[in-house]
Length: 240
Image 1: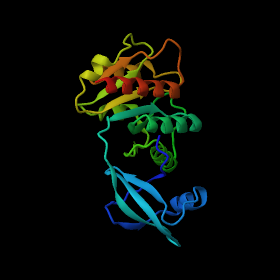
Image 2: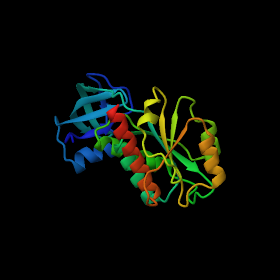
Image 3: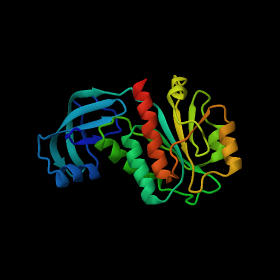
Image 4: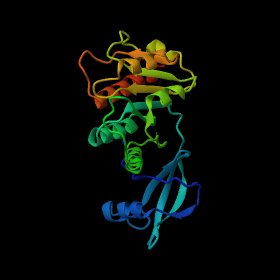
């Protein structure tokens, strides 16, 4: 794991660029990490990562100068996670660890048994950025607004693969399934506490892009199922 301080910088970056960090970023590098003038750190966005040096601390933020590019954007696997909304603490955990594991898009799903119906998108985005900074990844995952299961299924990409975590499935390997996917997203779908209703399960299975997979004999919490499935998908993708 890299020990270099990394900060997400959404604006366009190029060599010799002079700019300012945000108020929160300035507080972090100055007061928390205690960086001095001429100390170096890294900034990144979807186009890559750059080395920068702190030139001064000003009222509108730490002034930085870009020294040069140190890493190009990564060719990352397009993994999505669609999940029935859960309570805040386990949700935060799923978002944080899912980001570390390479999820590109989080899709909150509203099903019949979904207890939580709303989330704070701004707070989730902050967790995503912080997890991306700490895990050495370049891309920043997307977080969708909550949407109904039926709408999600109707709009699912034709070239995608929907990996449905289904306790009733007898399929326990993704090797052949993932081999069929060449250019579309690989989306993991995890249900709510108590699982999907039978009519919802039928809607999911009837989708042509759906592949059901059995994760474990034990009943898993939603957050455990999500992270287990992401790890399994990553394992098979890294072997391909």
